[in-house]
Image 1: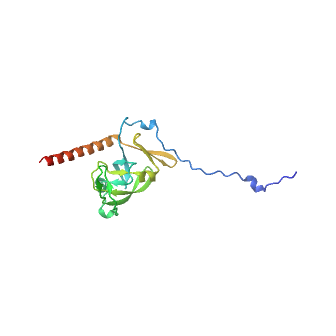
Image 2 (image 1 turned 90 degrees about the horizontal axis):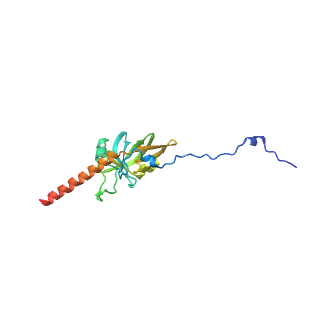
Image 3 (image 1 turned 135 degrees about the horizontal axis):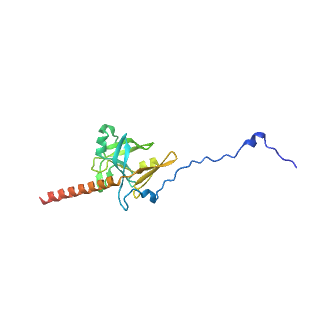
Length: 194
């Protein structure tokens, strides 16, 4: 019987293993509710580093398709009209009104060691929030958010990082909105009665 011999160098070959990137699983459990006031229906309001500044009262809204910046943040960052690029598409406000944007600006958003650049649509309208972060930011960060758990989770260097919401601030924003609506409707009623 004849046996074929392999060349000497092939005896040292090992099967190649497929290189697999291990990605952390992003999810939420009941443990993520620890430290939150339950039950609740609070919005997810966080602090983010936008354009090099820590910005409080940022609403995370996975139902929105664009990031929005309101006048207080625009002024606080020292932005000027010449810093904006044209954005011609009108937006629809929470109240269903059409809002014409002042323009658009691209800014870095830092979360931990991760930095993503996002286009903000700048509007001149009242909001208790400084900005709204929407799906483009969540997708760029590869993040998932949960209003129930009051967290945003995202992968970073093989680990899961999280941004924790601030329920008392979310509630203050809600009260500010309701109070403003009440004042606006009271003044409209008073003008009609004159």
